[in-house]
Amino acid sequence: MNSFRRLLPSATSLIVFEAAGRHENFTRAAEELGMSQAAVSYAVRGLEEQLGVPLFHRVHRAVELTDVGERFHADVSAGLARIQKSAEDIRAKGREVNVTLAASTAFASMWMLPRLPRLRQDLPEVDLRIQTSVRELDLEEESIPLAVRGGGDPVDWPRYHTALLAPEVINAVASPAFVEAHGMPETPAELARHRLIWLEEPVRKACDWPEWFASAGVSYTSQSKGLVINDYVLVIQAVLAGEGIALGWQHLTGGQTRSGALLPVGGHVLETGQAFYIVWPRSRELNAHAARVRDWLLQEGQRDREASATG
Image (cartoon, rainbow, N blue to C red):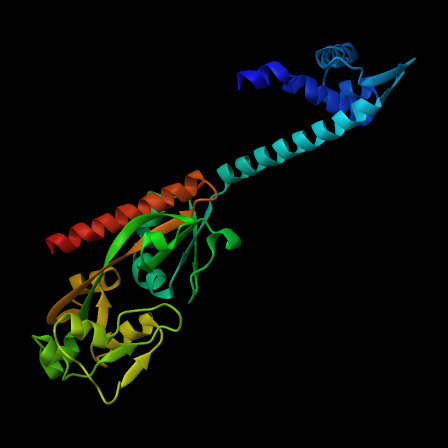
């Protein structure tokens, strides 16, 4: 950095030179910059002395760039334009209050929506925009600052920073009405004899009933799947309507379980060893509002984990 200070002209002299070269008139440059004509002339003369070459031909009251001056002016103009654009982008990011979060429909509906009143209370200056998709969006390509991702490991997303939101923990859930009508299955083997609701994700890979039963040491085969739904929100709505038993991802269904709207059944919990993460691109810095949203999400995730541990 010390070598830059010795070799490079001051920013003021470059700004004055850019205006003088653009107008090829010291008086008009002075008017634009709010300086005197003498101050412009002095700054240009100092720049020429520092570089050791004349940058302008001076003919009576007119000036025009020399060949060297034209080349230098083109470089200075391009450099100042890039600096100006970068500064404007930084200022715009600092002023931006809209924060987009990319997530699955299930996360948006079952995790975020119940928390929106608290988000508005805690972060009143932030306008949150939730963008749902059946596929994982490219945050850099879509210019989205934050996303929720699961079913993987941080090493699978080398272009993103990651922070743990919730471990993947899966139990079986039913409605109180279903249990009242059909009895409470106490073990996975008992549960296997009940009507099950299946999730078939169109893109994202998700744990299914055979995998869940296998983790409990039960070999499960079924001639018919019965009810199959490709949207997890609809799966849980079907459970609440008493249509059967479904797998419950605890970070999504924990609130309904604690309220009694859903009941854990089957006596088995699968901890997959995977987790759900908040991710954001390594290629750019989060602005202040996006960083606050990220931190708020992580605090909510910690609150959930503490509630699960004590409940």
